[in-house]
Amino acid sequence: MKPFQLVMPMLVLAINTAFAQEVQAPQSGDMIPGAEQQTLQQQPVPQQPAQQQMQQQQPAPHAPGQWVQVKGPGVPGNFPVPPGQANTNVNPQMQNAFPQTNYGAGNYAVGGQPQNNVVNQQQQNGVAPLPPLEAPAGSTDFDEAMKVVAPFAPGQIREMRGSLEETRKAKAYQPVRAIPRITSVSVDLSPGASLPVLRVMPGEISNLVILDSTGAPWPLAITPRISKDDIFTAEWMKGSHVVVVSTTSSYESGNLALFLQGATTPVVVKLVTGEPDGKGEKSRIVDARLDMRIPGRGPNAKAPLMGPGKIALYDDTLQAFLDGIPPKDARAVVAHGDVPTHTKVWQYNGDIFVRTQQDIQTAFDQSLASGDGTKVYRLPATPFVTLSQMGQSVTLQLDIN
Image 1 (cartoon, rainbow, N blue to C red):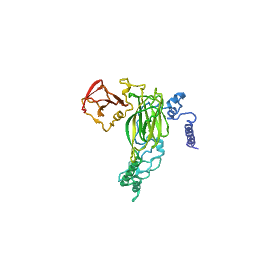
Image 2 (image 1 turned 90 degrees about the vertical axis):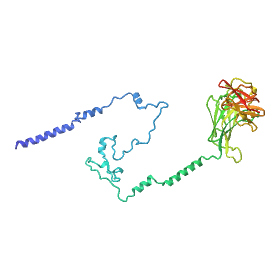
Image 3 (image 1 turned 180 degrees about the vertical axis):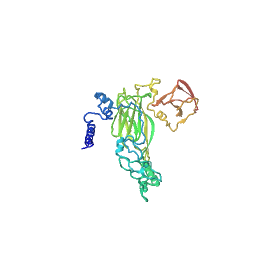
């Protein structure tokens, strides 16, 4: 036997043995080249205390009053990437396992323009890419797409918009229209007296303002009580003198009880809703603000600059001038000089009535005030009236008969 024939089998056996040892090296604890770095990355990280992990997992709460930017329309997370664009968030190994296909809208030729994703395409994993697909001649895809994009004609869209506006108009129609007013009334707490009335309507709120005889706010002691809480709603800010009343139904009635600080008796207010002011009328006056003057001095009463006899709580004439609706026979008087804002003068039954927000220095007979500081003074006929404005005296000359 030749020596060459003996050496060759031994050489092949040695090569196979060495190759088997290299393959089994990772199983016996040896590191293959390049695997040491991956092993170090896969080593477990020392666990942190449970309290620190909870603090890291819990997101920091938003600061009070912090503005959060609202994101506009865009490509949301986990949304498919359009054809021809690479997704940077995908693992390269996954891209190799699932190569891009030639299916989709981005692979059709539009107007003779070539596709970007079919240029320089190479075979991946031994799979050849498919040729680009083109719509067959005489295809109805365009008509089907138009039915999806624009199913209605422009005239039909305008007709639907007009019908929608008519529907909204009919939904907002009110058989009885509300006319908001600001009024004031003096409350009589004596036995046999009539109750003050607060006119409310659905969709409107009414503010009830409680004042004392001097026009100062008279706060409530406790929360008011209402008779029908399923129909009427009363809201009151603790410590204030204002109650907000609303209703959800028309043609209803109820009562509201107010308990004032230092008062011995409650003030009961009648609540009415929705009745027209007259036959055939479709309007209703609503008390947007009702100033109720309670006889007596409240805890916030003003300094007694005038005697109790000069405050005419139940004078209908002064009440009419205070509401800005003077009697028919009243004649407006022209005032000359530095006339303050919101100051008007009338002459009625031989007396002068001055409606202003300023204090008066001229002697007067009676007065009546509202919650916003407006006052009415009755005084004898005189050609001059002196008011106090910002601590200064202002004299007005009146053209009277």
